[in-house]
Image 1: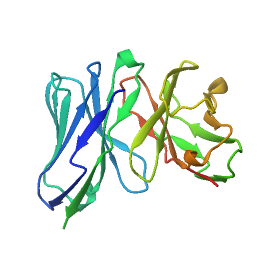
Image 2: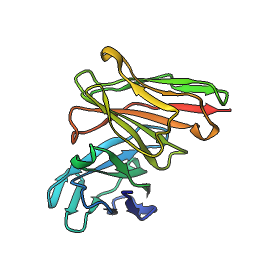
Image 3: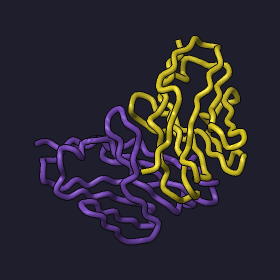
Length: 112
Length: 113
């Protein structure tokens, strides 16, 4: 059964600092990754998606993907207290009927 | 932005009863999903649905679960009968394509007593 592993489980960074979150899939058929952010008591909102090797940047958020190792990472620079949330990594494969598997998340706390 | 609606927001029922969770997806979306989340932790895929059919389902999608979207109306998740371990928040999501961004509804908190 496909697993998506996220690390660390929790992370505390100071305001203005850099947060780095990791995610790896065990399914070699995975060809698409998403990063979602979920504030407490709310529904997840997509931050970024990636399917090509390399890097993608949108504002303060940068995503990396290494398809050979099925590893993706999310980096948040100039972290703000409003970034404090649960960050969920999700992976999908077209050959898997677009079934989406989520990791257990990284809980980020940005301290003022 | 696009919104997915879920009705009701909270449902409390007795174990063994039937419950139907309703989802109003984004109007032009073609793929629909149900997820289960316990205590704000792991988001677990249950099932996805396209062109009137289930595409994939997980082991959590027990025989007591069923989904349908009759005539483009609500996308529903029915649980019959319910069990204590079905207590969770159920999120519906929809997307334009299989790889497109999924938009999540606010969730239905189901409590089985």
